[in-house]
Image 1 (spheres, rainbow, N blue to C red):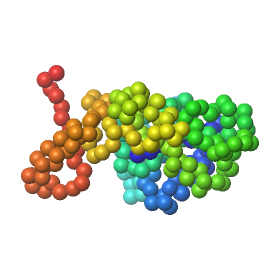
Image 2 (cartoon, rainbow, N blue to C red):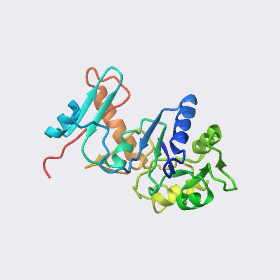
Image 3 (cartoon, rainbow, N blue to C red):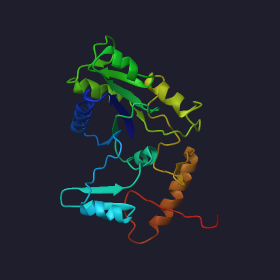
Image 4 (spheres, one colour):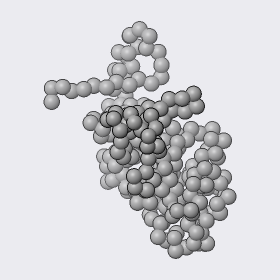
Amino acid sequence: MKVVVVSGYKDSGKTAVVEGLVEEFVDRGYRVGTVKHISQEDFTLDQPGSDTWRHMNAGSEVVIALSSNETAVLGEGEKDLDDLLRSLMDLDFVILEGFKNIENMARIVVASDEKEAEELGDEFTIGFVGNDKNGENVFELNDVSAIADLVERKSVMYVGGLDCGSCGYSSCREFVLSSVEGKAQTDECEALKGPVYLSIDGKRIPLKPFVKDLISNTITGIVSSLKDTGGNKIEIKVENHER
């Protein structure tokens, strides 16, 4: 999964850029997800007095609204972005809207003028949209295909903050910056590539390739000996009650 952040001030057109990228990537055959950051205090998708609001107000930690058209999962508090992105790993691209201060992800800045571009741009920025700045990778709002080409080429797989050094860089930050600059391949994070995922108490644990192969072969062998275990994705949760 590769991620890109689309940042800009209110009414800059960043939602239109996200919308255009989603449509373009879907047309190209990719599976896409989005995450919208809402800075408004006390914002809630649920309406006070509704049935689901009453469930939450009564103390339910998670409320799921299920209809024939959609499913909504409601929960109190802000969910950790790292956990949220890890839950979307089956997608090809995730586009984040807002998140002006986040790092370790390629960024598209949507700005109305050069001053805004300078305020919002950082070392992770791969392109600008809608401002009067001259230079490479500066686009108009309707240049959707060209913006998508840039994101497809320069966005980086989600690495979080493992800082394991498996890629040869001292930190995930250095790896992402090198990828954005075109020096490293955008999918060179060996610790996260492949079919095996290890998390302990919510923290992603990097794995060497031979460890991944060992775990994958062992688990697959055990599961294949059981009845009714056909499928492509195996999930196992182990709780250590001795600690």
